[in-house]
Image 1 (cartoon, rainbow, N blue to C red):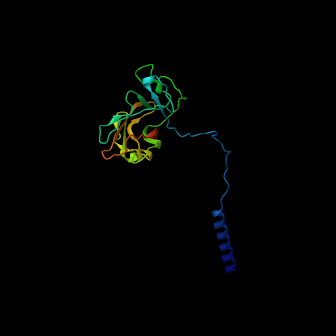
Image 2 (image 1 turned 135 degrees about the vertical axis):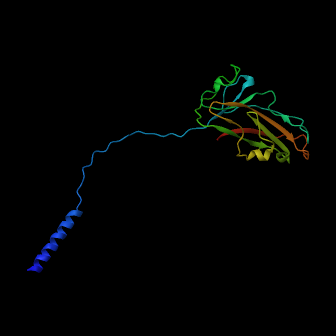
Image 3 (image 1 turned 45 degrees about the horizontal axis):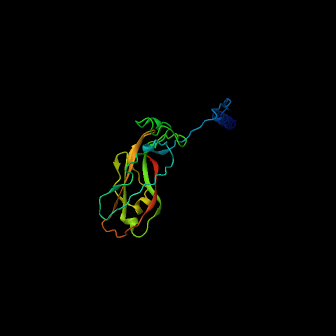
Length: 203
């Protein structure tokens, strides 16, 4: 008899213990939604303007700059002499930047919406340069008044480094290009033709 009561009591404790561990479902609500959200990345956009001809801000300029009579070890010459070329970080307000109202006060190409600070990566393309001139002929850039230092034509073909001033959105600066011929150059009466490109790199 005592044994049965003990077993019954043990069974009751087990049932109570199981009851304590039991969980019950909680009420859950409906789901609410915040829809149609969007995150857009910014852009970097630059333009050129030839202020000396009252030009507009453009993606490309036909400049046709020419230097003649370069001599080995001679003084540097400015390729952009007499041409006030400006480059700008285009956020749509470049037309307000130059002090002479009739210069670069329109867009030849649609205004952009740059939202980042940039420095410029100068490079040359479409180089046609015979003999040793790719390494004998050198260029340097002044971008916003800051000098890049000289590099060979071959160097500028593969350049990926930014030089010059930093331009915030809608800031611009003048670009000047200088050239010199190394003292060991021997190619006479020979011309190099090339295009100059600039790309804005975020800083």
